[in-house]
Image 1 (cartoon, helix red, strand yellow):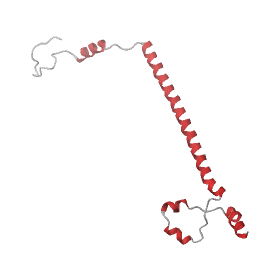
Image 2 (tube, helix red, strand yellow; image 1 turned 90 degrees about the vertical axis):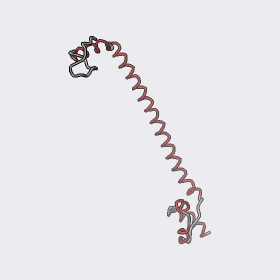
Image 3 (cartoon, one colour; image 1 turned 90 degrees about the horizontal axis):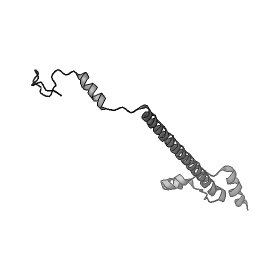
Image 4 (cartoon, one colour; image 1 turned 180 degrees about the vertical axis):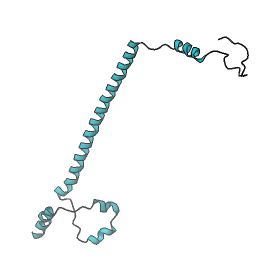
Amino acid sequence: MKTEGKPKSGKTWKQGSRPARDLDRELNQAISKPGFIQRQALKAHLEAGKAYEQQLKAGQSKRKRDARLQAEAKKKRKEETPVAKGQFQLVKNTRKIQHWSKKARAELMRLPTEQYYKEIKASASK
């Protein structure tokens, strides 16, 4: 770069009469662009990475789906078990339910009518 003394504007950091396109040309020549083969290799590498990421996501979603189905089945079995085994108490005075704790009220459930007549009425008639 050639300096030509102090510029007319008084801003010493500016170049004299050098056009900006010359600077751009020098910068572009200094930066080497990747060739076609390098670009293709980079593209293949990125595509392989994306494919691997998709494979991992598919495996993860499959594991989550299996775990969810298994948990739902377990929850369903857990709900059916006490009713089938007959592990329940009959509440005759429903006014007492008001004084129960919130957790106890949440566990309260209605016995199906057919099971009520099958279990309770049959044992009462004996």
